[in-house]
Length: 364
Image (cartoon, rainbow, N blue to C red; front, side):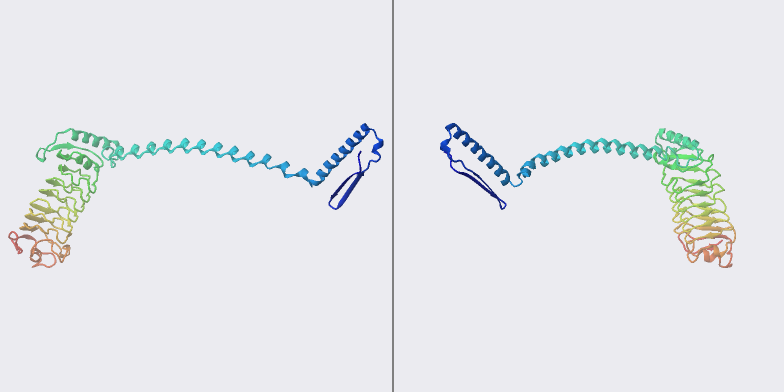
């Protein structure tokens, strides 16, 4: 029933051969034959499976068994450590938002200069008394009704520094006032202190004052002024355009350039030992007579330039020719020529006159 059976396998040059022969099957019973065939079939199946394993050539390590899927990047997908887990929002600058340190918290407005406004905290005040005195003065002045120069108020103020008072006056421009400062102790009136305080119609300075700064009383409304005897210097344009109708100067004072220009006094006496700067009395067209005392140290060119109405000059003593700033004469016309006509070194004291607007002077 079963003939010859043969299986032949060849791999990598090796040959395996198996032969199974059954003979005389006719002598076997039917049952025996079937059992024998089943055994043979199982043997064939076993051999076939072995052949498959050999044909796989290392299939045990087949990449499919280590398919990237098990370690697929998805298992470490950035999503598992997605930046969202440390999203900047968790430390969003809003948690330290500059608003919490808003400059308004240190806004200069909290230290606004107004809080140290010179009017309320006199920068020159050496003591609290000055501040209190000036503050009281301001309160009083602002409480007064507006007035005129002819109905001016008078106020006595005693301070050690005067620098802030002008600011007070400028805050009350329609209150005209005379200031009595004779009880004060300050030693100078600084530059620009009362400049353009047109409501200041008079002032009395203390004897402690030694100097008057540039523009100190320029463009005020002072009509008469007497400088204390201790004043030694008057600055540039100190009383320019002040409206002065009378002026008294101390001995030995140094008068700066343009110090009294464009004022309204009709007469002036230059005291002994004084010096007069350039154009010190420029444009004082109301000035009619000048008296010059002895020992004048210098009179600069143009000291009385454009004083067109001077008609009389009196020299009370000799003046060395070196005191005058040649070549320009301090006086209009030929006055210097006449003064030194008979004495070229010290001149000839006396009174010299001329006709209004004339250029020729005559000794009386």
